[in-house]
Length: 476
Ligand code: AMP
Image (cartoon, rainbow, N blue to C red; front, side, top):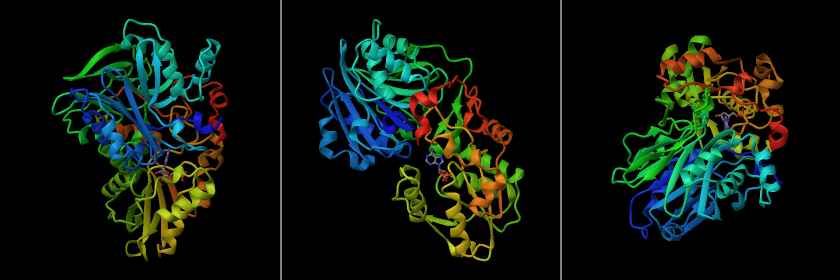
C-alpha cells in the first residue's frame, strides 16, 4: 500500500441541493463552481457525484478542477443534489483511484461520501470491518467511513451517520450523498471547518470554507457546529441531529496560519484578519532594523501587511510569484521541492536592492522554502534579510489531516532557532509566540471554544498513542 492511500488529507468538500428538477445538471454545476473556490485545499484530483432520486452518478479526474471535468462530464451529472471533493496531494502515487467521492451500493440504496480530515482510529476500524468479512480496496480512511455507513444500523441516514460518528475519532468534516438527499457533518471536536447556507435562489449548500458559499451567492454562511449533521434541504440547511460536541474543542489553528483562504470566515474570524493580527503581534514581539517589509506570496501577504502596519515600515512587493505552478509541497521528493521554489519565485530588485528587508512567511515546516528565498533576496541586492514567521515553531506532526510529513522532516524539531537561522542564511529569524498568537485570535473576535495547536505544543486533543505507526504517517 502506498503512503498515499493513508496519509489523508487537507481537502475541500461541498454539498448542494438546488431544489431543481432531477434532470437538471445545475446542482453538479454549482458543486463545480464551489470546488473552484476550494482549489487551494487540494490540487491533486477532484470529483463530483450527483443524485437524481434513483441513482448516483460520479465523475472524477486528476489535477485542477478546471481540467478534471469536461463540459460533457458536468452535463452528465443530473440530479437536484450533489457533492464534490478536491483532494490534496501527500506523497506517493497519484491516481484517480484515490480521488473522492467514494461510492458504494448499500441495502438502503446508493451512497457516496467525500471527506476532509483524518481518522486516527482508521486502522482499528479497518480491522473491525475486515474481521466482519467486509472487503476493502485501499487503506483509505474514507473507504472505511463509506463501508461503515453502508453497514450502519438506524431508521434513516441521519441516524446511521450519527451512529458511525460515535465510533470515529479524529478530524472529519464530510459530505454524504444518497439517492435523493445530501448531508454535511462535522466531528465532535470541530477540527476542520465546514459551513452551510441557503442558496440565493432556493436550495442550500455546504462547503469546507465560506469563500465557496460566497462564490455561490450565499449571504450568511454559518458554521456547522461540531458533532452536528445538516441536511441540505430544498429551502435551506436543516439540522438532522448528530452527536454531542466534545468537551475539548479543537479548531485547527493551522487553518488560520496557512490553509484557509483569506476571505473565509470560521468561528466568527475572517482568516485575513487573523493573519493580519499575527503579523502585527510578530512586529511587536520581534522588531527589526529594516527599510521594507515583504511577503512570500500568497499565504503570508496578510501577515506581512499586519507586520508593516504595526511596525510603521512600508510594505512592498518583494517577490513575483508564478501562480500557475502548484504548491511546492506537492512535489513528492525533496529535490523536486527545492527546484519548485526557484521555479515559483523571482525577487524584485527594485524593492530590495540596497535595502534591509523583513520577509514575512506564514510558517516554516520542513525548511525547504526559506533558504532559497533568502538567497534570491541577497542575489537581488538586499543588504540584510530578517525572516519573520507568523506562527510558532512547528515541532510536532499533524495526525488530524494537515500534511506536514513525519516528525523527522520538521526542521524546528531538529534544529534550534539559531540553527535554523544559520541554515537558511538569514541575518535574523524570529517566530510568533503561541501566547501572541492566541491573543491575536482573541482580538480578531474568535468565538470558538478552543484550538488544536498540537503542531506547536505537542499537546494533542485526542490520544494519538501508536497512531503514527499504524497509519504510516512517519513514512514521508
Ligand atoms: P517548508 O518549505 O517545508 O518550510 O514549508 C513552508 C512553506 O510552505 C511556507 O511558505 C508555507 O506557506 C507553505 N506551507 C506550510 N504548510 C504547508 C502545507 N501543509 N502544505 C503546503 N504548503 C505549506
